[in-house]
Image (cartoon, rainbow, N blue to C red; front, side):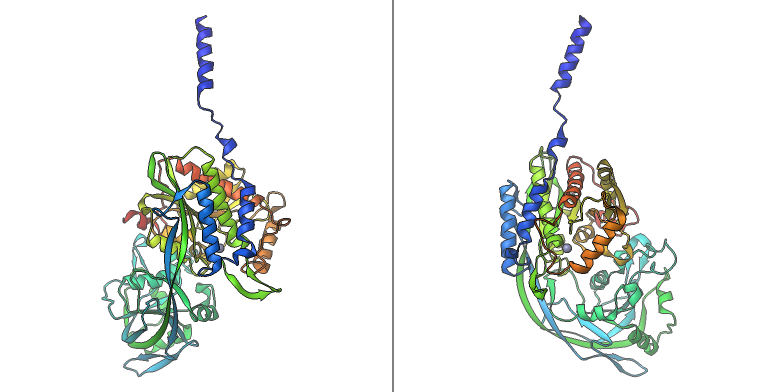
Length: 539
Ligand SMILES: [Zn+2]
């Protein structure tokens, strides 16, 4: 009898436990993704270009949808974060004058050098600014590396190499070998020169380590440039010179420099004054405008001041050059799909038990203009960076059906890989690193701006192996996309043709990762080899 009673109590107590059937309401809804994708990628939204009516429609739509879900405004009383931008069109002097004891010579604009500025001033110039060779222009404490050491940079111009010392060194322990680190990107080099207080920076172009030719430098450094109005220190002038011009420079130098590449790859490298001065001038036309990030929050229950941030860029290219009689760049995949998944993931969170930590949904502007919306957020974070547990970014999730892989761009940086791996395996998937890491894609999407301020970021989606049709099919489809639809008016939604199952499958996985993190009290860590680790620790 006693035993029976015990058994009865046991059975009752088991039944009284809260039901652990989370799985049945954790679903990210495919129809929700489809609904938002269809709207955002429709012609009515005019390609979602910042500063156009397309922007007004898009940000209103997102605000309405966030409100309908019962989410709270993410920026105090507002669902918007203003992103002030400056458009600078620079008129650069025809010549860059180089003077030294062996005589003067000129470099010609466009053919030999390009120059620009992010200073919103009518005129900026370098006047007899001393040129100093600063190797790769890198300050990397984790590698014990400092190319700027021992010089007061005020008024001087740094001459630096593209990429980082690891590239083509045959040494995988020197930086990350062939895989590009952030130190290899030109954006980093500009920023570091600004932090050092230099007046100017000149990057020596070389096609292979840069991964693009001089023509790309020419086209992307001319015409109007959109920038953030930022308080970050910047040089007066930033520019590039060709490899041939660099050789002229080193020949004219009073310093004996034979193999500058080899010199710069030495860990003990110290900056070398070239004994030369340079002068160049830019006259600017300046326009100001304000775009918007859209932001909503679902507050946590007990760890309210710790945040998981989901992000996706809402902008695309707007109305442009017609291709096949179509001038609207709808950007269905890029990135109406990411924003649709952002809304579907928000809905899934709303359908569930409120997590311990707060979850933020951030749709950023002007990704296509250079990650500007996310850069602005990272310079003006609404939620403390140190309290932000992780960023999960989505960009281009329309895969041709469900994929078996989850390809992680920026694999190896942080423990976010492990979170992704655990959740991927639960869905019968596997993770792989981005197969083209040497091209630096990690630095070309919004998650990067979170990494930069020390927030571990996950940027991942299926792309390599279709569950139903295998690897070759997946490759063929992704090549076809790059060739026929990427950044073209044909990146469109089609009710019959657009397959949403892959986007749902990825969004589900990304929801699961965030849901897990939102119910833990652990902060995923950066790995020791990551250049972003110090940003987390130094604050
Ligand atoms: Zn995109």
